[in-house]
Image (cartoon, rainbow, N blue to C red; front, top):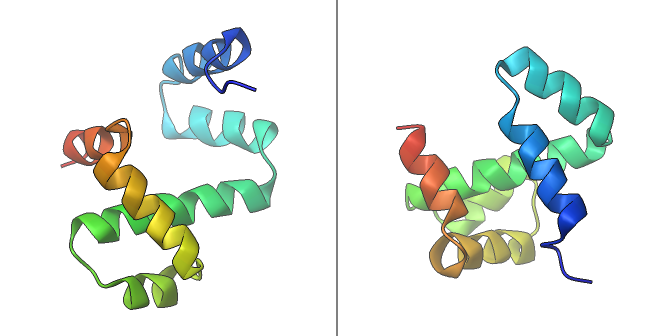
Length: 92
């Protein structure tokens, strides 16, 4: 199944309507399990640490992610669609 479809586009449009941290927390907590939110938070933390050139082993230790997941985040950070880099730039 293609991830880019009308249902996901509708989801992305909903995300764009979020205005505050509280709104984001409320929406994502209803949408996702707490475990999914924690996992996404760890992946985002890994992307930030990778951008700072922190070694994989330290990222694994700090986040609890597997080295495979850290490698996947690195691959998307460096050769993905540019989403991680876009957000890192926006948050600077």
